[in-house]
Image (cartoon, rainbow, N blue to C red; front, side, top):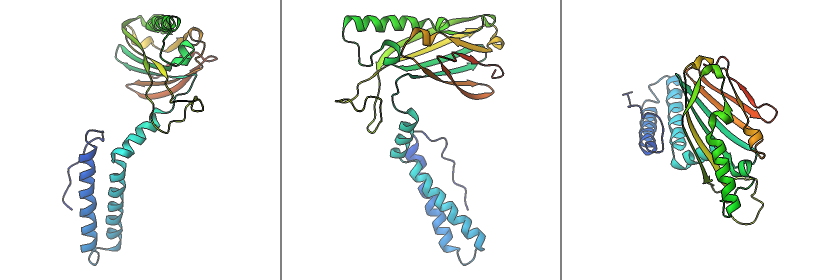
Length: 236
């Protein structure tokens, strides 16, 4: 069978092109299977039909609706007490991204309206901006903050999300804190762990789902009030 160019990695931008190529693959496979059914050995015919079935399945998988639904499931619902911390270590640079519900950080989840609420948000942002004070790396690594950006923003919701507050009247309107950090270390080989005062600073926080990415691969872990330390030995 003549070769068909690879469609490349699937993204929202190239999904229509990938889907079109897969439709062509399915049509070609079906026609060959019908034309050669009497000539091909049984095993080859079965293989062609299997190929056609796989192409059909891939057409479904690349549909915009399916892609959007998959992304939606990966994002997951809003859950009080749980935040996410992503850590990427490359050379002497460490990038971190924190996302946490407003309820965890300031004790309310709606957009701040009163002066007291606005003051609480600004105080929390100031605490989070001190990344090496909140997430402490070994002194031997000699790390310093290159950049720190913190914002309080309205959380995006999708139809069908099951949320902690779905039983309350009205559409859910939640806020979340989003922080991005860039850290540089003189001795990155000494980044063997991470300790946090995040749970001490923010009374509503109960758990952080941590994703660590290095040249050796990806590691997932959890940090909690009773386990506020992360062992990074061997991940560098």
